[in-house]
Length: 307
Image (tube, rainbow, N blue to C red; front, side):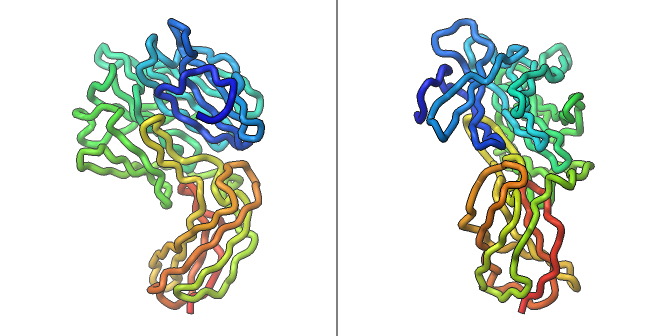
């Protein structure tokens, strides 16, 4: 385990990349009983851990069996989802905490997340999979908009699913792919649009492309301003990297180029960065638009030609 001065025991916690390149984690304090959760930040420059303030509500049950996801939102706050039914929000800029809405009691059972996924939607809201008890069905789905927690439609098989089975992945379309790991997959469609300031910005890219050709693309916040989705200690599906998408003007056909050699994986707003991309060898010729997509949010399209 890297770094010095860590207080918690690294048990069942997830790690969240912050806009300042530090890493945020909520876990348990070593040797402290009972414990309701302890927040720390890792500084990769100094290699040290430090306390990240006091969490205003218990987010870890006594004994610390599990905890929910910790999700960075585009506004620079981290939603910490607890396995107690209570949740909290950490403000990265101020280092302060606030209490978030709690999950409801449904059919006499407290809903919470003892392992489970969450995903940041393009509009900055967070989709969360929650269930009652430890590893008990059913699953309920909620959207957090920064002030309220609203129950939304569940997949048709949610009655037999506990939250720890669900995985989420933010697709390039802005939809969220939900995988129950038992052969069922569904797509969640949010209704909101992203803030214009969250979009990747292309500053330089060739306008004439050839099938099989490799090119460089330059811009700002090409990785987006969040990691996309989070689960915790068992699984990660972060999408803080640029995808290059071509949409052909005449046929509306969509082709993705392979991106690689990213200069950074940071999620700092406005950060200059660059990457390489390779146009597929079988990409058709024709006029198209090119965008960079990060966490389901595309840049402003630019006209290009493939020939």
